[in-house]
Image (cartoon, rainbow, N blue to C red):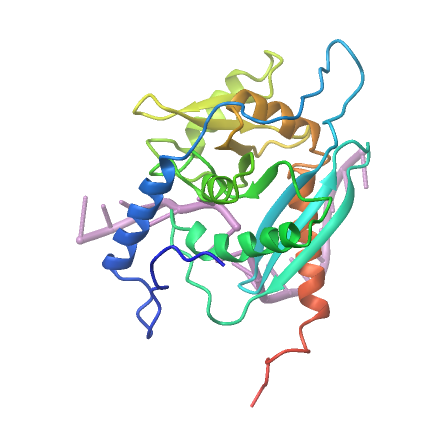
Length: 269
DNA sequence: GCGACAG
DNA sequence: ATCTTGTCGC
């Protein structure tokens, strides 16, 4: 269990001090030095144009999330199967010790529990240990360019893609701006637009993952996967608006939480 | 000062 | 993110 050299800033009612946030910022900057934003993985992408064969070698994809201040979930899908079969799932019910959610510091609430779920697979030599993470949260699309997807990717050393279901207003990006750009590209064949901040940095892409959906999802680089590759992969695993690994992790976390609502220390007095 | 702020 | 009933549509 890896410490980050800080204590969760929750002693009393005071949730997070300026001190804590400064420490968190330092950690993000430090970990960012290990970030890789280009393709760097051993497996091969399918080539949709030349062959109808859609497979990632030995395929495994993962998704992670936390839900309702109570349940972290890790679900692995086999992307070599057309139906994207779930081949592994695990959950972790949280006690009351978790850090609060503070915008741009999501990783400090969610990463520890998710890394623990991954570590458990690794320790037991599980054959379904994921080759790629789809993370419920942004990667580079983040005020300091180091969101949850980067955080998890670097610390677990697994290629990672960040998925946001809502826009994090960063570097001048606005939803109305995104809408306009998407509409402008509406008939040009592509279903995504690249998001460039006011600073000129490419932060990610807004993408209509389903034909009918007008509300986009936000794809950004997590670790060891370029934005172009990330977009291709996400397109392959969207049965609905939310990419299937994340959707399954969400659904199954709800289910697990509901079935375990009575067995713990939820003592009502 | 005000609003905005992934999950 | 969560709390919530119905409702409209494929």
